[in-house]
Amino acid sequence: MSSEEATFWDHLDELRKVFFRILIVVVLFTIIAFVNKGVLFDIVLAPHNADFVTYRFFCSLAAVLEMPSLCPSYFHVDLISTQLTSQFVIHMTTALYAGIIVASPYILYQLFRFISPALYANEKKYSRRVVSYAFVLFFAGVLLNYFLIFPLSFRFLATYQISPEVINTITIASYMDTFLMLSLLMGITFELPVIAYFFAKFGFLTAGFMKKYRKHAVVVILVIAAIITPTSDIFTLLLVSVPVYCLYEASIWIVKKVSAGKNILGNGNDNISEVSDSRFVEGK
Picture (cartoon, rainbow, N blue to C red):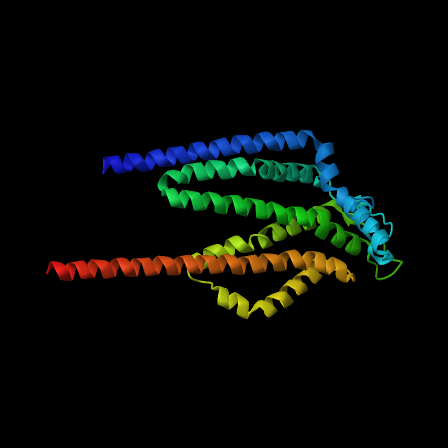
C-alpha cells in the first residue's frame, strides 16, 4: 500500500514539475512577445491593410487570368479603441496567445514525455504520429485563416455599408475577437482527420457511413465556407471549401485503414483461439 501511495505521489510530483516547466517557457515567450509589441501587432494587424500579401496575390492572379473582379479595390479601415484599458488588455492577451502558440511544441513534448512511460512501444509510435499530425493540421488551419479566410472576411464586412451615411468604425476588440475566433475554428476544423481516427478506433465511425453522407457533407462544407467568407466570388468560396473537402476525403481513407486493421486483428485473434482449441482437443 505504501509503495503504491509513494508511486502515486511521485507521479503527481513529476506532473507538477512538468506544469512548472511549461509555465516557465510560456511566461518567457509571453514576455518576449509583449516586449516586441511592434513586431507582434505588425503581424496581427497586417490583414486590415490594403497592401496585405493576400490582396496583392489576388490582384496578380486577376491580371494573369484577366479577371478584374478577383482584385480587391483599395480600402481603408480605421481601428479604434473605445475603452480606457482596452489596448493594454489586448496587448497582454495577444502576447499570452503568442507565447502559448510559440511554446506549443515544447508543451506537447513535455506532456508526451510524461505519459510515454505508461505506453507500450507500438502505442508510443502511434501516439507520437497522432500528436505530430494534430499539431501540423491545427497550424495549417490557423495559417489558412490568417492568409485567406480572415483577410477576405474582414475586407468584406468592414467595407460593407447599408447606406453611405453610416460609417464603419471597427474597434480593436472586435477585430481581435473575430481574428482569434476564426483562427480557433479553422484550427479545430483541420483536426477532422484526427477526430475521425479516434472515432473509428472506438467504433463510432465507419468509412461506409462517411461515403453515404458525402453529398450532405459537401453541402455543409459549402454553407460553412459561404458563412465564414461572405463574398460574392465563387473562386474565394472554392479556395476555402476545397481544402476542407480534401480533409473529409482523407478522413474516409483513414477510417477505412483503421477498420481494416481492426478486422485483421480480429481475424488473427480468431485463428489463435481456433489453434488453441484444437490443441486442447488433441491433448484430451
